[in-house]
Amino acid sequence: MQLNFFMARFASIKIEEINAKELVEQLIIDGLKQLEAFEKSLAGTSYLSEYKVILKYIEYLADGNTLPKGKFRHLKGSKDGIAEHEFKSKHLRMYAIQLPSKKIIILAGYKKNQDPDIVKFRSIKAYFLESLKNRKNEKK
Amino acid sequence: MKRSELISSREYWITEIQLNLFKLIENYKTKYHLTRTQIAAKLGVTKGYITQVLNGDFDHKISKLVDLSLAFGKVPMVHFVDLDQYIQDDANNNLHIYKEGFKPIQYNIYLNTSSSEVLKNYLPPSDKQIPAPPYLLKTEVMYNSGN
Image 1 (tube, rainbow over the protein chains, first blue to last red):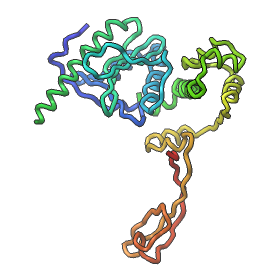
Image 2: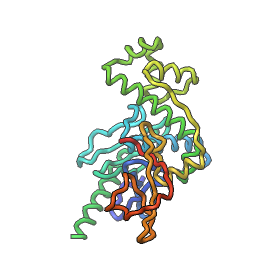
Image 3: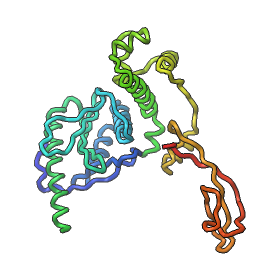
Image 4: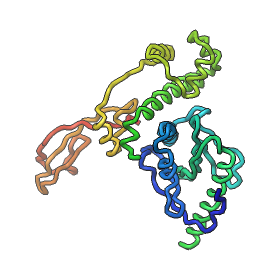
């Protein structure tokens, strides 16, 4: 599993499937849209159905509603003050961060990989937030 | 996946109904400070049943949906919208017309005779906004969420 994203180039883009009051984006790492890549990996499997359900959960939350506890939780232990979300279906998980004006889906994976995926998610998150800071500094 | 594909999927709409039902009961539970056990007693169902609904996993018979709605003082309005029309409204950010509490607003469209410009006027015409005599072209109805 790649945990070092030091040299990676980050960007984010609106998730076209989601139309909500709040903007929801997906992370792009080195040109690869993370959610889109995950969706492609699900092609032909029964998990695609769960994937659609999670997209609906995200949209519902981004419309200002609350979700059942079994479908969503705030991850505890964020050390940088940026809230972390986990969206859940029976077999799938999606990990997101909450920025002031939008949510960004950082990583998607399987429930069975939950623990290592959370580690990976936080690693990507840290590098991504660092890249945002660097971008701000470059503009100054 | 395209947005239209998601909207056209059964998963999207089943989840929408499950979440709305969850919202209905959760709001009621909060408003009246009730526990799941108390709600179950009120409805004459098991606590497990209420837990299932509050977990967003409701997938029972239509009769159960109606029973639940009525028990919480709501009527379950079901109406059917043309899928293509819905996809088009979604693309145009007009989905609020399908939400609860929306109100239609009638407005007039006038022809500004000095510039041949078509003006949409949401309020009764005033001299400042529309040069006299404005020609009323037509009246249309728009919808907002009522918020």
